[in-house]
Image 1 (cartoon, each protein chain N blue to C red):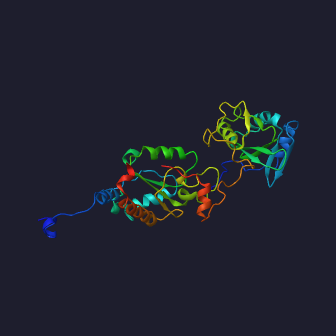
Image 2: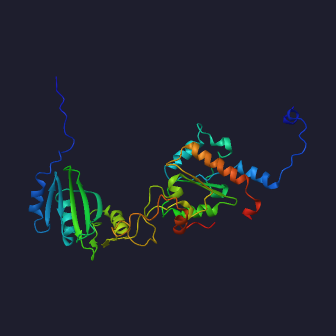
Image 3: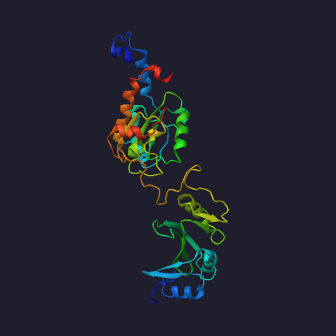
Length: 160
Length: 182
């Protein structure tokens, strides 16, 4: 008694390798445990029981960049922090993605001054921008689902 | 039945006698004493600041340097004001000491010998205003990266770094913004 009997004769499923790999990558993203400001509080809330990010295969925050493939830049990045952020990004193995969470990480937000990087896309390539100050956990989850949709249709040649 | 009387745990902050006492003790070393709403400010010439601070700490019991900071009064000359915020724990009094500095000679003797916590405060003033503290044991930048150019809290530094903030004009944004390349 198992799944096979309930579904009947499963036979063969045909798909492309690209789709199979994209599906596997998209549903087991390990984000980097990395928060810079108040957006990190919303990121923690998104993982906690009320919003439960683990429904989408994202619950495993890794404290090491070498084990993670998604960087959620949660908060404003100061000019002094920028080399550190780039260093963390360089240490992550391919394939890797970046979400700029919140207005400050996306474009500098209200901090149009000398100390803050005007958008983290000056330092690392960003895949999804999540707006809000800070974005609610639903918004972050929506951004992550957008990223999943993006990963699922990425060609294999990209990361060679 | 004994009536409980609350004892004051510290003396009441009364600055009424302070200006006169300071004028008498430091008459030849200060340029003026300003009193505004019970706040006392000593304006001191640069060459006497260490003597005045030492006197205030040892004789007047201002044993704590709460803060040391700087103000840029740009169009005016002298341009910079170095401010020492002092507090006396035994007397429960606060005092502000101010030194005006010229734009063309932004140098100060260091107060590290009098108040040791002036070390990091003076490094911060050097970092953000470019005031040089002579005799400081370790005058490096403290907040900004070591390779930073300029002193960003000076008035000549523009407030905003992004000209077309909050714009939807992609062409202008792309022309100005340095994007990361992988």
